Length: 77
View 1 (cartoon, rainbow, N blue to C red):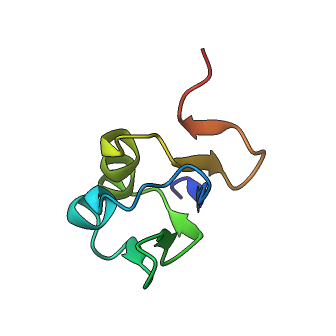
View 2: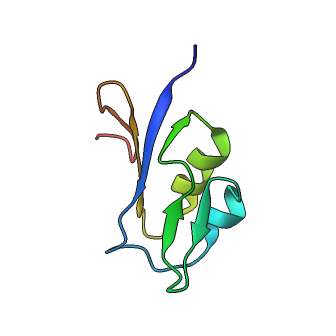
């Protein structure tokens, strides 16, 4: 079985660029204030969601392993 992720968006950082929706249209949506929200905060590991996190111009998307909470993105340094 593959990894399960917890996906969240720091709305205090999100600038509403929409890049996450472009990379993962099934993974994110923008609300009327152009703030991003994950469509499934608990989800199977997904390359498009990871690409959305990596492509976010302000790194507002945080992904951790559902079991254990280890960071997936941004990675620990």
